[in-house]
Length: 413
Image 1 (tube, rainbow, N blue to C red):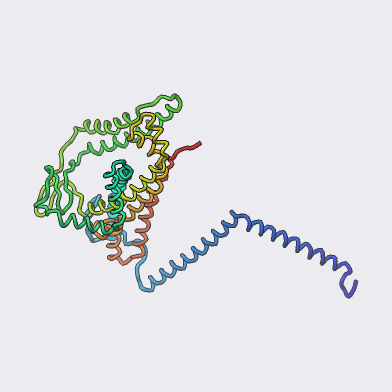
Image 2 (cartoon, rainbow, N blue to C red; image 1 turned 60 degrees about the vertical axis):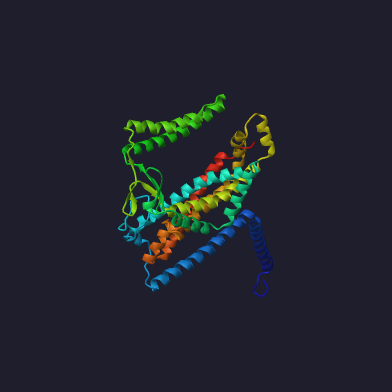
């Protein structure tokens, strides 16, 4: 012992110091190996981003809530249960000003679904036709399709809505001077008025029969495909499916007496009563959205068809197929894998562009929500509802198109 310190102490200190260095080197190696792992490093970055976004969102929400309380502004969605106290020009369900804001917003959402659903169907059909015409060997047809595409793509959709709205209101006559191309059908500045069948339980049962027929057709297609895979024998799926979809509802309709009583519109005062109608606002919005979006769909279809190699055309024609059969049975099925993804984007664009309906007075969801915001003063909740509704529309459309894309994609070896 020297000065109270054991003579072996330096060796102990050296040993402990060496162990500490070894442990630190092991920790450094583990940290380095963890950081060099791309997957683990990406998880760390994602967690950091989530924390930063969460803190920022917490700051915004807390600051907004404090400001609203300081100014004594009501928050929450309790206003949805209060009477709306305003009328809506057109509705798919019964509605009056005494109904709640929740029902008024539901009416607006259904109006948006109506114009979007009908618009998407017409747009796909019209865009496909124009896209095929753009590739026609007939010079006139090809040039006309090209001119349509260029003109419609270059004019903003809002201007097109204003144009068609002005056409319907400025050029069409009033109700008393309405154009009547067929008895019971009228065209005027109040819209397109036409007769509909009067309510009868037979129509409800026929619709249920139609749903049952669609389910039966789906099962039949599955069975026919499995049968063909096992035996090689084909089954006339199209003809049998058509017979089921048309025949079963007709049989049910006849079984309930085949009612054919129509609710025919007639002029009364300064407007029509009876039947149903498409308002000028709806027709202008539908026409503007369809003509504008169909120009982009036509280019998508043209690009999809041109993506199929020329050898596919030549081989199919050499087998004796006609040009229409080649296009329908050979080219379009292969082109769909190129067409469907950008086509989904155009469907979403049409749905979102329908929010421009407020400019021409069509009561879509945005228009009804704006009125609700003006009356209640709860703009944050109203904007949040608009964002949520359009998010649901977009995700639903994307989910359906993704499912369809998987169904039609080519399975390669």
